Amino acid sequence: ETGVTQTPRHLVMGMTNKKSLKCEQHLGHNAMYWYKQSAKKPLELMFVYNFKEQTENNSVPSRFSPECPNSSHLFLHLHTLQPEDSALYLCASSQGHRAAIGETQYFGPGTRLLVL
Amino acid sequence: SQQGEEDPQALSIQEGENATMNCSYKTSINNLQWYRQNSGRGLVHLILIRSNEREKHSGRLRVTLDTSKKSSSLLITASRAADTASYFCATADNYGQNFVFGPGTRLSVLP
Image (cartoon, helix red, strand yellow):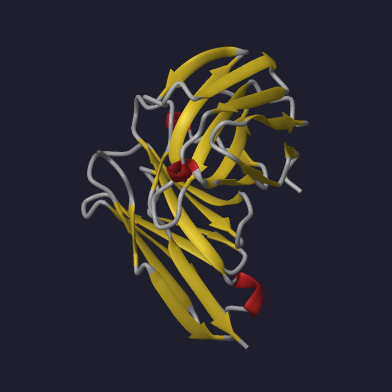
């Protein structure tokens, strides 16, 4: 276990549903990330929060809405998704938001999302 | 883009053999990390190499970095079936806050 948990592990939803993904880290880190991993594509960074403040939004459609109530919890609210949004959604955390100094990211097991 | 590109996309070897995966990138980097992902799971950090380092070891892992060629390699010696996974390189430049991950190499180690 990496100290990062995600729930649910699997989710099937219709295009009109609203659901939320949850991530929790027990590592005392200050930065948390959402990534999307689609088949045969590189990991796509979606959002970054550092000290509860959103610092990155990589042109993610508004049907994805992140929320970070504290440094340990991160949510991804989903609304009116499309079938092409089906993917593995990974949460990660790191001590800070500084890849340039070689910080390690710790990943959760992911939520496998299927949009019908 | 400084995206890393792993090569090969897929590799199949017998248990006990060595596995070598390569990562190429486009712009100058500060550091490069390798991660492993077991099927349908999260990524796990394996090793970090900085731009002023040429080689690092960790157990059965050996990573090299050639900044002149903008490439890195990951060698897994005496592979085991449990090494079956996808392996990703992630690069960060001197100013970047984020890592950029490559598409990965899928390694299959056959018993």
